[in-house]
Length: 450
Image (cartoon, rainbow, N blue to C red; front, side, top):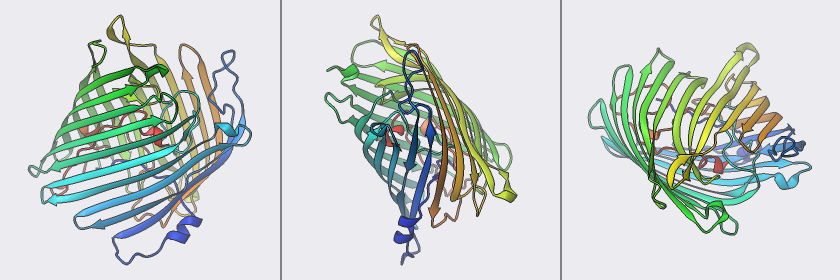
């Protein structure tokens, strides 16, 4: 099965200087880069009049990086570094940047077991305006206004056992911390553990996942107070092949949110996912997905219940001209968990809409490691207090050197319940390829690294 998190970035100068043929054929070094220039009508994501006064400006982005991989018959390791920045010509104080280093390793510990480890760290300055993500991986707005300097770190571990040719068991754990660099910083600590059982059929995959996550919010609302919450999620997943390149996934379960500090009790809600996916060996991919889930948001220091509908695609439109389209369309209805009258309850609803589309041209292949793109992004967020609208037009260049031998997916597949089932097309899987547990992603945690 494939899970898609594509790299739409490339490198020219730095990659040419750093790439060389390693003595060992299992060691590779790749340079990546993504740069753009354009205009926006709302630099700081200000509210619409009369609540705010949006300002227009020209902007640019740059995101160079290096990826080193080393593999042996029993191990596979990846070490990467990425620098990302968004800068403005007139509103320079609204610019943002981040430095991010990541390591991941997979170790075959026996013929039937494997261990995965990973660690990441990032530091930088966040703003409401983030464009380091590619059109096929853009997430809906998750942070509040203002500029924040931060450091962030995470560690994850996974263990899998191939109990039989068709049964596999998995365990995964993750720990993360997000720390803004300010007086009385609103820190967030989170720890999650997930247990999974999976059964592979000829054209289907069935899985059961139990996840328990603890989150500690420190200095909530700029006060010396804290909040401790527990999210317990149980999900049954079914994935089905619909031919060679199409697949579907249905997850059904429930989540219980529990307040551990103020004695506000628990709140139970359903949890689910329905998705239709398309993948191709050339790297083309598309997904239509609906999810309802509960996830902690490190920026807003709250757990959110959200309905989300997304359409993501990276497909050719004119192969003879080397043209492709890539983008994301989405909508989200989110409610924060609050304490009302001493009981855990839901707060006011926020609606967020996203359109992020790019027309790509590649001189080599249609879904490329190098491309020029004309990109348009529209974001609209409606809350009780105000409405925020932002439009952005960009001309971008992206690529990678040396080219990947196997094209990767350029879109972000939906997988809100972690190891409830690998995303992408079910299979083609053999008993010798154990299914690995993966920790659920926390909303906002990935965005902090942008």
